[in-house]
Amino acid sequence: MRTKFVELRVYQMLEILADKVWTIVLGWNNLATDTVGKQLIRSVDSIGANISEGEGRGSHADNKRFVRIARGSLQETQHWLRRAYKRNLLTAEQIEELKPLIDQLGPSLNAYLSRIGTSNVQKPKTKNEEQ
Image (cartoon, rainbow, N blue to C red; front, side, top):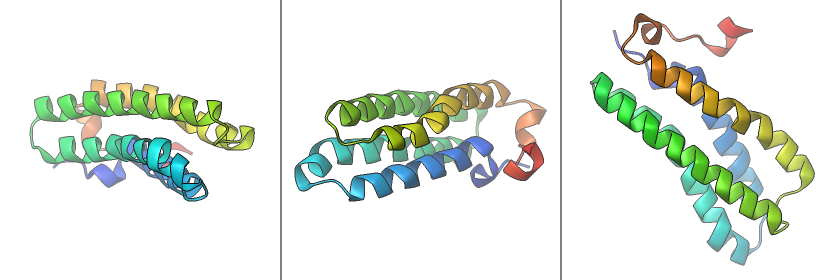
């Protein structure tokens, strides 16, 4: 039995991050939204999209490839968040809210990548099981 991507803790974290970024960008002016905002939203949404696509491909090799692409999208997201902060589009409070998620995602993606193809992936921990 394959894992449903929506049950993966790393995917659930990505949904939270993507929704927070979306809400923040909605408050920006047109120039900021058209330049940094759209790129930021695309990159953060790409992380979860690649996890779901990899999971749906049906092979461990494809799944691993898409998780690696997701890691690249995470780094792109970090780039756009840095640009947004340097351009005074993000407040220190918003950074404090996003940073813990960003900091957890890299190790979580790496852990998921290392588990693909092992029995641990068959039964991922949900948020409730980890608490």
